[in-house]
Figure 1 (cartoon, rainbow, N blue to C red):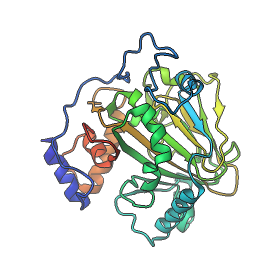
Figure 2: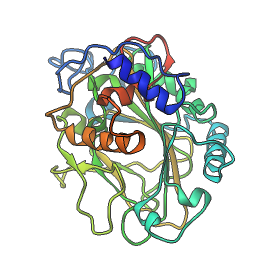
Figure 3: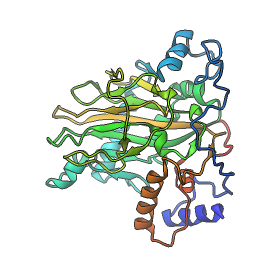
Amino acid sequence: MASRRIEVLCGHLGTQKELKCTPSPVIRNDTSAGSAQPSSGSSSTNPQYVLPNTLLSPEQVASFEKDGFLVVRNLVSHNLIDQCRQRFADICNGTVDSRGMVVMRDVAIAKSEFKEGEQAVTKLQEYQDDPVLFQYCSTPEIIKYVECFTGPNIKAMHTMLINKPPDAGSKSSRHPMHQDLHYFPFRPADRIVCSWTAMEKVNRSNGCLVVLPGTHKTELLQHEYPKWQGGVNKMYHGIRDYNPDHPRVHLVMEKGDTVFFHPLLIHGSGMNRTEGFRKAISCHYAAAECHYIDVQGTVQQNIADEVFQIVKRKYGDSIDLQYMDVWKFKGRLVHGHDVNL
């Protein structure tokens, strides 16, 4: 039973505080990235990707419908960003327990001489149980925008603080072009959105986000590790085949600026050519009404298999889980009522 598998995972992780070990929802075999609403007849008066709301202007709605992303300037307070920055430093220095989080190092740093503190950590994932960092996910300024894409019942499904390092010459600080939906075993895609906030000035010099406008209207493509000479970071899958001549937009942002984008939007980031670390914080949200899917035999099977390998190395081969069980542990309600996820 899925519920038993989740209880086992809770026991291994030593906490059941945030994870409700209840029977899992029905898994559908629908692997499409479709919308919760009919896609035919979408127009500025009948949007597909934006729900009816009083917050976004008609121009903002039209922009997201066309491009798949929306930048909101100076949305997150500098005070909250500074709190998150200090919390990240405390976690890296060991003064705050990082239990339950995934602490990652760049492949080039991992192969070089030992570095301490913030210089040793390039990404912090699954911070949903940290009371300081989770303030970002639940801040009303962000949630009111998220609700325009998900509706009122909102779950935070994937959390990250990115500390992009200065490139060591191997170009490993790049992030290959990808679609975030590649990682997510839940649908519909149109009720999932990411908020990504610059914690300092972000530009092409330190590796800002680059997006391919309009690619949110495509299907989920095959992803794999790119064959980069300098190595690739763990889980940095990239799209195997896409049009390199597609128009690109480099998102130059100031501290507190936030971009919201669709999980099918193709995006990545370039090298950090500066001497400092480039910091950003993000959260992927989904409508609590979303449902889990079976990814076996689909273009997502490779990422599911890789996650299982990591879980089994950590907890032993005997652990019995489905890919959705891993994501059920990560999710945390931020607004409204829990439904499926």
